[in-house]
Amino acid sequence: MKILVINCGSSSLKYQLIDSNTEEALASGICDRIGIDGELKYQPAGCEKNVTKVAIPNHEVAVKLLLEALTNEKNGVIKSLDEIQAVGHRVVHGGEKFSSSVIIDEEVLTQIEECVELAPIHNPSNIVGIKVIQNIMPGVPNVGVFDTAFHQTMPKKAYMYGLPLKYYDKYKIRRYGFHGTSHSFVSKRACEFCGLDPKNSKIIVCHLGGGASISAVLNGESIDTSMGLTPLEGMVMGTRCGNIDATIVEFLMSKENMTIEQVMDILNKKSGVLGITNGFSSDFRDLNDAAEAGDELADLAMEAFSYSAAKYIGGYIMSMHGVDAIVFTAGIGENDHIVRDKITSYFDYLGVEINPEVSKSRGKEVMLSTPDSKVKVCVIPTNEELAIARETVILVNNI
Ligand code: ADP
Image 1 (cartoon, protein in one colour):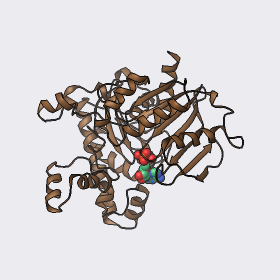
Image 2 (tube, protein in one colour; image 1 turned 60 degrees about the horizontal axis):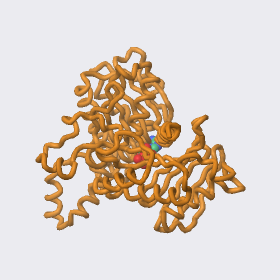
Image 3 (cartoon, protein in one colour; image 1 turned 30 degrees about the horizontal axis):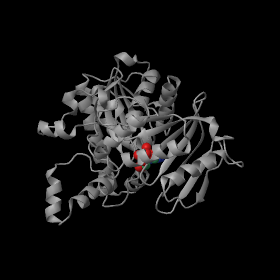
C-alpha cells in the first residue's frame, strides 16, 4: 500500500510517500515558506534532492505541487494519484478527545476544530492540510495521528496542574504532552532492541530535537511526560524556555513594558539555548563547535540543557520505581554525543556504564551502554512518518 504522510505547519508542509510493504520512503520533501514566497523540495529515494523556487501562496497550492512532483514524468515515483491508497496526517493536539489515531470524517474534523483553542498555532494548519487533501483527492481515506494521543494513558496525578479545579473543568487545562508518535515508536523499538518484554518494562525516552521532551513509559504506556498544555513546558529547549517561574511573565511585562504577546514570543522563540547563548545559536552543532573553541556561554547552554533533561530522567526513575532502559532519539539525541555524555554522567550512581568505543556514534541504532551496565542506554532513531504510515495502514485495513 502506498501511503502519503503529511505534516502541515503554519508555513511549511513536510511529506513522504511510503510503501507500507517495504516500509521505505519512495519520495520525501517539504513545501517551505508557504504564504511568504515558496520553495518546493522533492527527493525521490536514492536520487538528488530537487529544490525549486515557486510561488506557494497557500497550502492548497503546496499540496498540488507535491502531488505533481510525485507523478511528474521525469522524476516522479508514481504514475497516477490512484496509486495513493490513503493519507496519514500528523495532528498536533487531540485534547482529551483522541487517545488513538482515527479515520477522519466530518465529526472527527469538528472535534479537531474544537481543539484549536488548545493549540492555536498548530491545529489550524493541520486542519487546512486535511481539507485540502479531501478536496483534491476525494474518496481517499484520511487518518489523523495525534501528538498527544500516546500520553492519554497518564494518570490524573501526573496530568493535573496545581490550579483551581474549575479551570480544568471549564477549559481542560492540564498536561497533555507531545511528540507522542515518536515516544510510542521509539519505546516499542527500544523493547525489541534491548530484549525487553513490552508488558513488563520501564523505559525513559529522551526525544531531544529542536523541541525536546522526555517521557516515562511503563509497561508500554506513557505515565508521565515533560511537555504540558503546550510544547512550551518541560526541559530547556532550542528556543523555548521550558519550565520557568510563572511570575517572570508579569515581571518582564512590567520591567520591559512588553505586551503578553511579546513576552510569549520571547519564551517560545528567543529563549532556551539560543537565549542562554545571548542569541548565538539554537543549533547544537554550532554549540558543540563554539564550546570546543572555549566559548563559555555555549558550554553553559549545553550544561543547562543536559541538567534539565537529567532532572526529568531522575524524576521518572522514581515514578516507575526503577528503569530498564534510557533511550535517546531525534536530532540531538541521535547525533550529539557530548550532550548524551553530559546527561548519562548524572546516572553513574545507578551503575550506568557507557561503552567508549561506540559513545560517539551518530544517527544510527546503537547500544551505548556496556554489557555490565545496570541500566541499558541506547540510541533509537525516530521515524514519525513511518509511525504515521503504520497507523494509517492499520485503520484503513479495518474499514
Ligand atoms: P525538529 O524536527 O524539532 O526541528 P530535529 O529532531 O530535526 O528537530 O533536531 C534538530 C536539532 O538536532 C538541531 O537543533 C541540531 O542542533 C541537532 N543536530 C542535528 N545534527 C546534529 C549533529 N551532528 N550534532 C549535534 N546536533 C545535531
